[in-house]
View (spheres, rainbow, N blue to C red):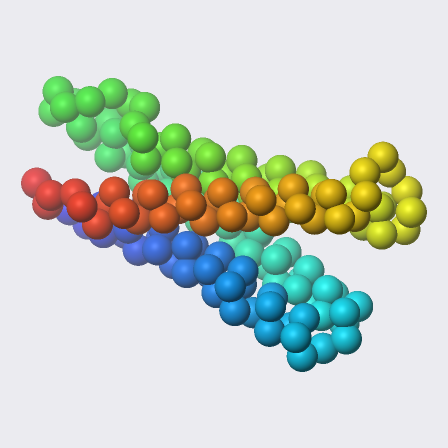
Length: 148
């Protein structure tokens, strides 16, 4: 089914973006550039990923809702699926990890706020990793689906 293939492709693209940023781009920036400049560039790249992630999450949510509705109409499931929960989890990690923690990290960098930059960066990095694992689970599940 075309929707299943599109869902798998979108989830795999998002996972690839996360893996590339987290495992290759950010470490390379910090290895090759001065820390402040590397942080500035990495921050911009993570901003792009967060906005792309919002769009991908909406697309995946809509596709997954449609697939769940089709399964439910065929008597094979409910409107709530594990894949839907994985998408919502990745969306939650994006919103909390970037849109909530990033402003707090900026304030901490200026010496404001209740938390240290290191603690906020650790929380943000953990959420980024969890998002990648949720998407890995979604891609893994989609790759194992039978085309019926």
